[in-house]
Length: 485
Image 1 (tube, one colour):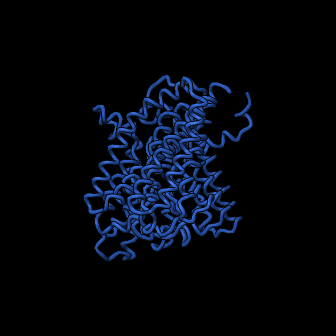
Image 2 (cartoon, helix red, strand yellow):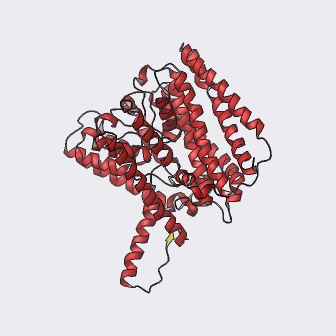
Image 3 (tube, rainbow, N blue to C red):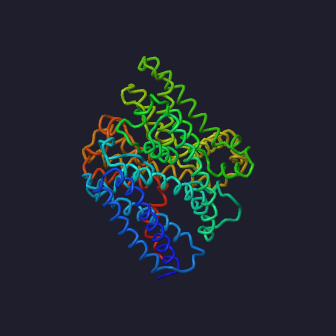
């Protein structure tokens, strides 16, 4: 066994062990509520996970040091797969009618913070099961932040090289650097979750829905404790708490780290932040105008609240809903389809393409048009005051090509499997961008993914996994060149 492989297995074993131990929390909640079958499933799954993860950890223990880039790719993909399989075990054994396809779909949807669900009747499900779904999203949220800040910049994924926290980083420093970053991120992430939980409690939510929604909000995941999603709590004003924390969770956590050291100016000068807030404002104003023109809401909740909440939820990839926006007409549905491909800022819990890539692509287009007028002109590219090299530009444009190629292929496969056009197009988009709900009567905000066939669910599961790991990190492992010595 090579040193790199030993380290990969050691790290995965540790992560699986920790995740398995976490299962005791929902077990205690289920025992306290009298849901003994579900509680037993969590305890049994915890024992199996601790045994398997512990065995892997003990058999591969040793010093953890430098790791080549190829080892880092295997670690990232392997860790997310290992955690998903471990997370699916209690869902399968819980006696809630989930087969392995549904259990793995739900687990990966949780860990990737997608929020697509195959579970109906959430209001009547065991509380431990609801807590477990929220825990998975919370873990997935902090996991993707650390991955985006510590791994992607050094591995050159999709233009993320722009966001190295210090100069001189190389792939050989991946693991030590990730450890340093994780400590600061965890403190900020936990603080946001606690404040969000307290705010939800302040609106009148019970402790369990408040805790589950706090974890799902800060992770921009979207799993709810009710079939009505956040629509169940609009009368309490909880939707406005959600809006605030969805926006905060969509900002770069690296800037939060700097702000914690007294450097607040970055939050106001960062091009990503300005671009993201501009998109949110335009989307909210546009949707508000659209639904007011149709006179859709005449009750106590004003149109702008529904517009702001649902637009921000889809743009950030959270996936909560306060109402069935599928009933707002074809123009609104077209807007929500476009929102799926936006995303938040790099280094946040959000998903999809992300704002900075559109900004760089727009800058590249302007430079291209300028060169058509002055072919011999030297026009350097800058982003946030930093030069954008040709390699970064190619990385961003390459991401666009691969991302939308995978989207087109998955949509075509889903259509060939018998899905109608709206369900196929929006289902592929909602899962690849990790948004959650799609469009239409089946997988829209008022539906679930439960009615879909098992083969369709596996395609969507693969989409969620590929999309969350920035597409290229998964596809590169499928290349024969990657495995050559």
